[in-house]
Image (cartoon, rainbow, N blue to C red; front, side, top):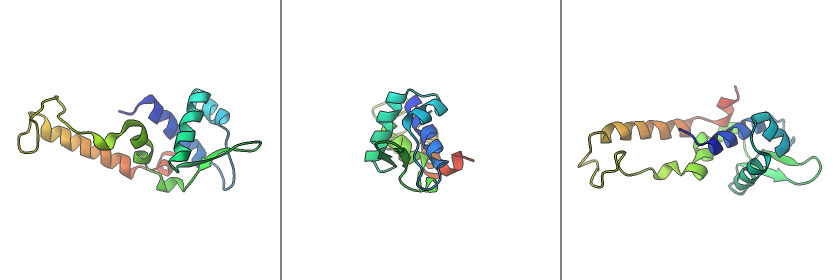
Length: 131
């Protein structure tokens, strides 16, 4: 259910969560570890630096590290900027008049699945994935 980009960024953040206080990890090392394209991963991590999930430092001994504790970063924090899951709306079957008051055949089931998935993303942290 996750795009390749989301999976790669999640994996990169799990690698960054392994760092000790004050350590930095270069994008080349991360890319090799998670088997992702270095240039693309670097651009994605820079985007997440702008969003406040990671910190980047240029130069010798620089790289990336998490901007906050991995137990405070949820999968939703990572997936939302990439996949915009919070705006999932509309009918799963594409019907224009589907709603809570006028549901299609799968409306209630899809709503349940969607809500469970979003809750999973909001409750699962980067720290929990590194165990």
